[in-house]
Length: 286
Length: 336
Image (tube, rainbow over all chains, first blue to last red):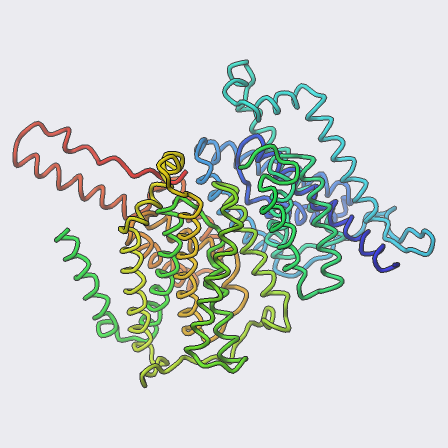
């Protein structure tokens, strides 16, 4: 019993991290129809930038901001200078993001060497939380809270603000949105930066749990893709649901059958693709 | 048809004479690597070029077949032939399963599913240490000696790979020009119309997917014989991406495009790694550059130039209205 509760909480923490990562992916895909394969690399780059910030003594929260801001800036440049030229050619866009992912991954090894680096837990969140004999690291609970707050904030942004209304209009009918005077060009850049910022900041937040190492990008990207396939592409609620499902399955899998944790990831994918190919909460197939 | 047959014969003669001309074992081995990569790229070309199905998980088939054959022949006590047959059959069956899953979506969804499936396989090879040896890989494998020919000799292995390469290219050529291959190209260009004409688009794509998986498995078999060792690297996204780059850089949807692309990428990789340690960065940069500046690939680009040159010369000789004939022929629909 104790074991299952502990692993469940670990799954919750992993699910939270996956949501922060895949929410940005889903947001970008929903509006721009770009499957951003650099997303794992953004996550890793954000973590390294944040770590450097922490090492220089600026503190954890400055690291989160710096990671998010750096990656947002990079994302904005990629969107403006490269993806923009390939508008309307989704396949070419995907391949370019993959090429950029390789460049970023290699640059990270170059700049930060190949050694895995731990990220310290921010002050105030060290130690554990005790409840009825269960012991749980405070920081993981904090990350779960952050993911829930982020989910709520994104939902409010999409449903209750003018920017959200414009994004929804763009998702539903791009040409009509443009005809109504929405500047979709600016909208694209804003959304791409926002999604990239989430990945970058998420990388720093994940640091104390996963630490930072070369290959973090290609560990996280497939998990994010599985989440998005499971939840339904472009759906925020789907990303939320899918993240926690994968978080649980992966955590229990790793604890119970460490050799087969990856095989178990097949199962939800097989089930969803067979029974409901557009994903749990997706509105349409890709 | 005649001149192109002549080209193929010339190309074949060059390939056959190559080891005699080169001599050095290092370069003969490099040529063997190119042939193996070319088989894998040509098998991916069935999906990307002719089916319009861009897969980012094609290393899965080569990798799985390589793991299977090393495991079966070197660790489970099967003979080379039995190991090879079981590896190819098992991998082809896996391609059927993956095809059933990935073809539930199309376009970007298909790409994402193939990528995720490929990376899950990589994770299995990396983490299931008791079976796959984890990051250390599986070794203890030696090259077979079919009919008393020792494939440990670089030139002998080159000819072995060349025979398989020739078979693969011929089979893929026949496949593409068969009515079935034509219908696959129909599903790429006009899926709705094909379905209205009574073709079962899904099952045409699925069969082609399995066929591509089969030739991918054959490439994996050669890979295992060549390296006598297999590690998770062969299953990694980088390998899938390299293979896709070969197809796109050479020219998707042409028979020889992926072969040229494979030669380019393998040579670039070997030359580059002699001078710099940053192959991944170079791969990424080449990827971006090719997609931005040469999305059609080398072979269609060059042959377009060649045709335009021939047409202008002909019209100049006839001295008639030049422009209509000199226009470049319309491009085949790119898979979008």
